[in-house]
Amino acid sequence: MPFSIATWNINSVRLREPIVAKLLQDEGPDVLCLQETKSPVEKIPTEGFAALGYPHMVARGQKGYNGVMILSKLPIEDVGDKDFASLGHARHVAARLGNGVTIHNFYVPAGGDVPDREVNEKFGQKLDYLTEMRDWFHGDKPERSILVGDLNIAPREDDVWSHKQLLKVVSHTPVEVQQLSETQDAGGWVDITRQDIPEGNLYSWWSYRARDWSAADKGRRLDHIWATGDISNAGHDSRVLRDARGWEKPSDHAPVFATFDL
Picture 1 (spheres, rainbow, N blue to C red):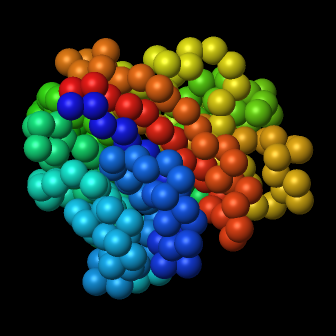
Picture 2 (cartoon, helix red, strand yellow; picture 1 turned 180 degrees about the vertical axis):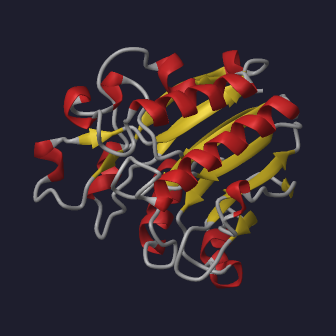
């Protein structure tokens, strides 16, 4: 059963309901995973999404911050969530498709501005979050699983606009890249996007601070689609919908897509 999946940090699902609807209408992914929904679950505009052919949802939310949700054309089963680093944040939710594939949707903490846990508590929380993800995957090896989300780390040199200039900037520091690599290795995860697009600069986030984000093109690839090794060969057609960054009242992230033949 082939199915397509997209992941998108939407930066408020209620504020940006129109562009979520646009994505669903124009692109029609079978599954859409959103992060930073910034809404209690009961206030997510589910009726509008259902009318567009997405009647199935699992979500975790809280007022004004964080939040993750999985919208689907296909029936999905809620299979829980984890509170990594005991932050009490809505940053993870998992759902299972009818074919037995589990989808994990993550919103890893951004980590603040200073890459030093001694002076920046948020950076320490980010590293702890990744450590607990790693340890979970070590202890409970995932199978037939897809992991998506805003992982808030651009790991490769060509995942950022300037490797040299961003080495001391949160999201591309060596300690974060190492933590993410260990987390990926612990679960036997394959980076599907880079499996499909192995070379060249690739970004999914552009700061709101840039007057002309597209011309400046100072992007980072913070949003990821991974799959466990047992199904990674089924992944293909990866892409970033860059145009969505320029839609009306956009998120600062663009959606990332992949298709799986399973």
